[in-house]
Length: 143
Ligand SMILES: [Zn+2]
Image 1 (tube, rainbow, N blue to C red):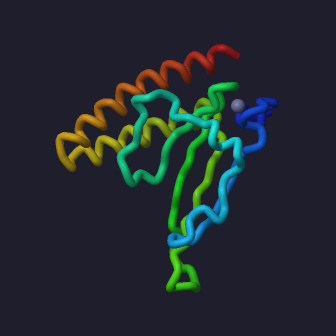
Image 2: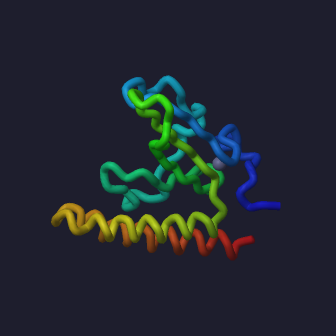
C-alpha cells in the first residue's frame, strides 16, 4: 500500500491523491479546490516561496500528510485569445516530499540573483527546508 493513499484523516481525505482545477486567467475562482484545501498550511513559516513561484509545499497538520500545489499554463490551446491556468494539488509520500523540497531549494537559490531580498528569502527557505527534512526523516523512520 502506498504511503500516499488517501488517509482516514477527516481534514485532507476529501482531497484524494490528486485534485486539479482549471480557470481562465481573466475569470479566476470559477473552479475551486475542495473546502478541505484551505486547511493545508506551509510545513513551516520559513518555507515561503518567492512571488510568482509555480510550486509550493503544503501540509495537513492534522495527519502530517504533505501536498504539492503547482500551477501551469498549458500551451497549444486552440483558443488563442484566452489563457487557461491549471492548478493541481497532489498528495506526496515522505520520499516525494523530500525530493520536491530539494528542487524548491534549488529554485530559490536560482532566484537569489535578483537582489538582497531574494538572497535573504533563499537563505530562510534553505533553513526551513533543513527543518522540514529532519521532520520528514523522523516520519519515515517512525513506521
Ligand atoms: Zn490530513
